[in-house]
Length: 128
Image (tube, rainbow, N blue to C red; front, side, top):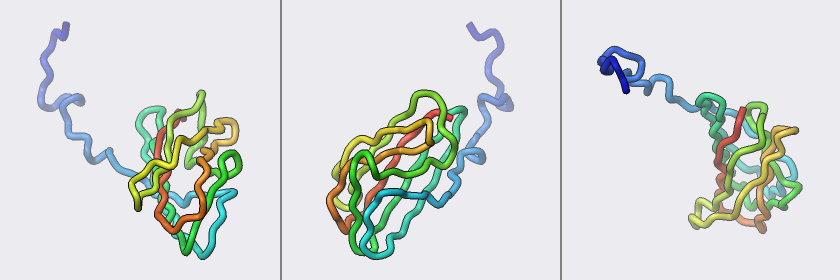
């Protein structure tokens, strides 16, 4: 039982929005097939020992991926057993599928996606 009530100036009560910010990073993608020059944006946010990340790929013309060979390098070195991530077609709002983490090499492998001109987003979290 809490012996002392929370006070308005206590750490637990403070507005922590000033600490709640995303950092941008330039994701490195390997094994993706691009026709045209895509726009690739990335951002990440660390809370404790978890890193949340988002990668947006806007194709120049088309982009395609192959499960097991197409991946994104993570913004911060991964530890532990992995995390959870998915790739979504943001244009159609349909999930492409689950991603797989390679903790030893700090990579997230994406599922297969046939050539598309749609915007793809990879988002998830992992242990750091």
